Image (cartoon, rainbow, N blue to C red):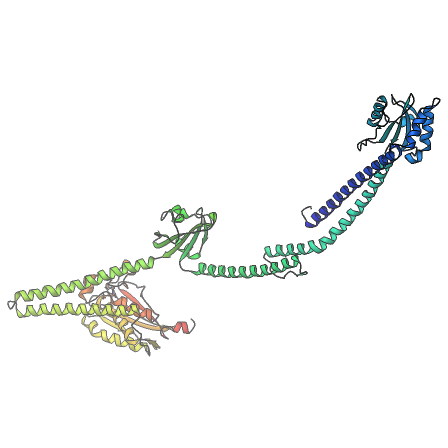
Length: 604
Ligand code: ADP
């Protein structure tokens, strides 16, 4: 309650008024007392003072009276009562015995005397003892609760003390009155101060309270509505500055929020995984990519040590100085993750470690495939080259001693091996063009059936030579399809050619085709050697052959199906092994009737 500015103001004003009244009261009381005391002693000095004072001479004369000296003295005092200010209540005169100070007579009665003789009375008694008429007891004592003057009066053998005593009742009454007035003034002053504090609080505290409410609103994130600047004084300036500050704060917060949103979106959708840990190694952020890569639920309970502790110790990463970072690799369920670890700085507990994860499984696989491919190519070329070299050397070493038909068969082998190498190189060239995307498809609309028939026809002689029965049952109607006819025929050639190659003589090869739902398909089934289960997923790999010897024998390079698959994929079709009953193989080719991108264009 006393914390509010209003209460403080009221309290200050109350204290101010009270202390002011206390000071004024004290000052007035002291002033009145000292004025009264001074006036008393001045009056006494006027009456008793002076060298040739007739009043004092009269008193001495009365004291020398042989009959009733004390009575005479009293008479004179009574006559002078007005000048002495004797009012018979607060101020009285006394006639005392000069030596003992004993009461003789007075304007009041004996009980009005103080119990103990005062310093002034003792001084006067001493003066009487010394027979010194001029010394009187007239010292003022502000602390005493009475004022007195004792004047020795000696006449003949007699000695009296004229004692004037004022019991200060007048000044006490005056002070009581004063106190009452001050108290009344204090009450009025306090009332005024309370009213004043209300007035002040309206003019000063009111705007401050509004400002406080505004600041609380802004602190709670509500920036709507400016505060009204009601005056041009300091509070008005403060209100204006506050409005400006709130505006700046709002735009700064909006900018920060915007940046945060951008970062959040980036964080959410980036393909690289990002995980952040606090200075104790506890997870504070993890984006969906990181969760997917780590293949486990990543939540607040996860720690750096449980995730990446095996790659790099947390403390060491935290101790790194920017822009240094640590790198490592982590294998999670067959995936290889590249890990970049860097500290981020903040104040003490604001620091931590940021981990960026990059899935390099495909990259690693590609590298391995490239190495394997280079090794395969070298191997495939080395064999025919070795053959060519050995037969050529034999021919040269033999000179003319070799029979003609043997030399011819050697030369035939050399030519065959050279053809084979040319074949491999051509296939590699085709593949690399397809890989690089250089091999543009020459699209045209052509009858699917016609293309199949021409390929079947081209294989007919070969099939007949091997004693195969090559059957093609064309359906009633096949659509026109869009595609690169010569390349698609190359694909069909490879499939039917393989069926002829990998079927022992006298086999049955059946070609079927159809179209449905915008897709034209062709299936080639044979009852040949078939493809073992373990090899079925690999036959589209480059240089993959189930039986290397048989393939080479029949002039195969192991690249035919890979090239065929590339061409079909460029047409956005499907080339795959289909389920097959009994011995043999079925290969299925599917092509979009409208050509590549037709699915996207038709909105499918
Ligand atoms: P190749 O030049 O060796 O024929 P391909 O890429 O055309 O290469 O075929 C890859 C491998 O797939 C062949 O070596 C063969 O082992 C197997 N293959 C392909 N088609 C058939 C089939 N119809 N029957 C049995 N095996 C086949």
